[in-house]
Length: 134
Image (cartoon, rainbow, N blue to C red):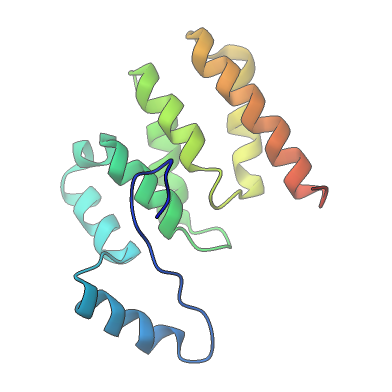
């Protein structure tokens, strides 16, 4: 259970990852990243809900996935400061370096002080993580 996101998730890794993931999704009535992205593609407003934003982060693969990146980029540009702030927290899960320019811009240019602050904190954490420091 991820206490921040408020969702429960299962990590599957190894040689049988694909088949085990499908079995787990079917057995546990779970949600796959592909299904989540399909839902958001049909109804972009669905992505604005906190559980969906968090699930995008938790389900994102370790390497850049352009569909997820594009969805997060759209959410980081949302007109609602709370959505931008939640998205900043969610992108910490995959921690892709491609988020750095977006965070830099938000840390200095976002019109909302809380979003600027959260972006600054996330930017420092991203840089530390990407440099290999703990």
